[in-house]
Length: 371
Image 1 (cartoon, rainbow, N blue to C red):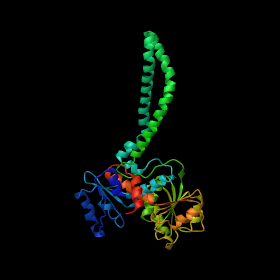
Image 2: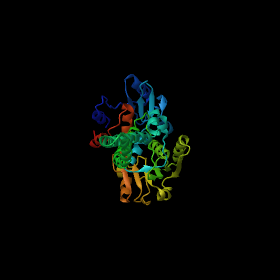
Image 3: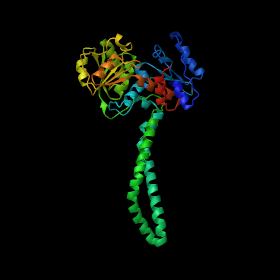
Image 4: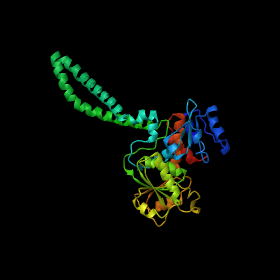
């Protein structure tokens, strides 16, 4: 999907697999700078091993102790990021699912570029410009239409009176006509400003405010679960981590609270904690590997616990329709596979390396078409 994206934008980049044995990971990472790489993705088992090799880490990478994206900066320093949380939240957003209440992301605060574009009010900048254009157009149009005609018919003093009266008469209708156009331009410009907000030096987890899913069940306590838990709690969701080994769920919660002290995250035993939690849950996320082999794997759910029609069930597995998603869909819930997360986390890496907005549709098409 990366090569398809490079080709779509006419960029002279190429994405190549580079198998690296664990005992050579240091040499491989240091070689990125010498060989002129813009960056690299990091997969299992190297995601934690590269941490000490980075010059800087984004908050999410530091918190979850895993890097999946390395960015080689112009000065040769290395930034380690984790785009899994971003990819997950972006895909939820693409399916119309909003999470939490908070407006600000720690990853956004890290980036000076993001602060300039996001924390400064785009609405204020665009509105001031639009209001100025509205005023200029109203006055110019009114003066042109009335002033020319009045100067031919009346004296200078009458011209002044006509002009004032005309400005009053024209202002309302002109403001109506121009205001609609200006509002449209404001909206379009705001959308453009917002679309630019992801072109930063770190991957912001998605901050949202509308129609939030507050209560989330997170199944699993591994590396993928940590990134998802960070993104969800940072956005303001209340997360219940369910895992067969309760101590691992507790460790995940402690990890998140160290990075986000106000995080609403608790540990619960699987499957005993499901019946009570499921009654109130808005979103259920499976971050385990169960279902990767279809029906041959145990179900990461208690089949006696029903789903509701207003629930969303998300499975990070993307290459098969898992038994959990089948069960959720049969129960009337909205079932979402993890393909979009894969694409969006890759798109985020693309943007970090190139500084260009990723052609997400092209990347989706490439993944759907296969190798």
